[in-house]
Image (tube, rainbow, N blue to C red; front, side, top):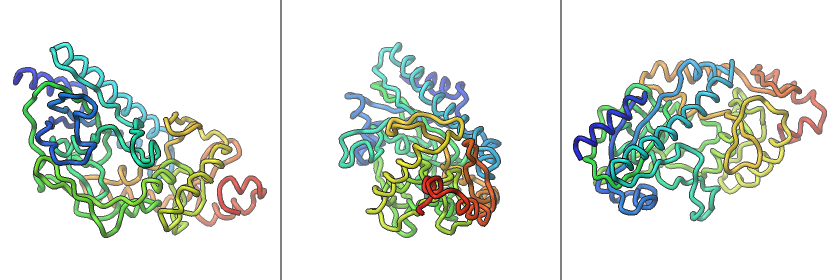
Length: 346
């Protein structure tokens, strides 16, 4: 078993991952329901967690609002890579005689929660497996951060009945998070609570990050239905300018209104299909993840790019363009009322 463990870890590393670790039913014990790996594989003993890094050049183009497409394509490709690597590894362990289940990297949700699929709760939390196995730690945002790549990673995992020895979690001093709050500053939706925190206990160890407000906030903005920051000084890559409510209760009507108008926008190029949307989606945000870098000066630089490179508007041919806040406002005012109503409240 020890030899198989080393082979499995080496195989994952050879696949180009930036981090790999192992959690077990014991090291995940006491956690939330989504930390229970036996839910997706009865008799499961271990979970292998790994991470792939996102392309930093594409991140720069995305945050500076110069080009959206390279990061969207890279993000999709790395998610597919992580899911494929999980399938390949699960098959390898199966051939060694142990039941194994690959975990889809993203966009796969439980239907048995109070809000159903709209709660966007995964069948198993890859974040919990990652932090308990030492792949990374929690940043204030709740994103998993790694010592070298920061939060700009995509996680993958395999759950198996093989009883592998766990790897150790990273010690607190390995976490670079100094609660600079740039993750919060880069989130137009206000999903992260400024004061309250959530504590998760996994295998007797406590892990902490900011408490999340309604996930509909993230669905509304990160989903691309709107993107203008409340300050109106900058935006995500979404050309939507619908207001971002203050109260969680107001987000479902806002989301439905945003979705109805989003469907009428010209195609902005690229895109992907999401299991919860009847329409093609486009990657327009993820800023809290992309801003977070181990070097604080790099975090500041990335946040400055996001904040100082204007507001995105959409041209009639569907293309997106970043312009000054003043120019964006004037362009909206110059549109015919019926077209303007597709992007903001008239």
